Image 1 (cartoon, rainbow, N blue to C red):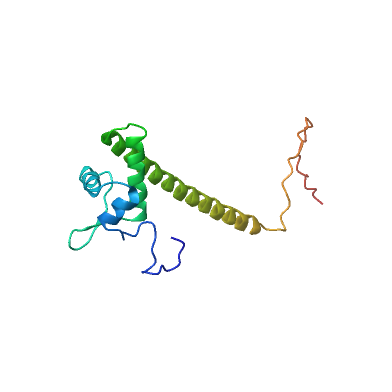
Image 2: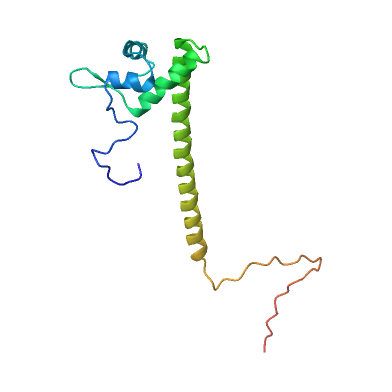
Length: 149
């Protein structure tokens, strides 16, 4: 979400609005095929209070994908279910990576701000330390003798 309030009546691709007969027509499948896919867990539509199925635009797209994989690619339903599970897992991992990248970028920015604050707090009246060169000269110290008057 982008932080704005959503209109509760706004339709998104996840909004379950299509009854099974409309979903079947939109996907090009028989309603009984949709019921079978629901039983197998390939496409799980939302349910109304009366237990009726309601399909979203995303569900319709998934039904079309299942049909394309089954009919055109010759993949069996168990294989299609596994493909869908893996695609969902990849999508979730990509979302998590994006969240972590955002967190890292935020932490790096905060660290740079703290570093800049430390540098700004340095005293300006101090001079840099310069190392004294070593010599081999020997200095002997002798205390002054006190002279008696």
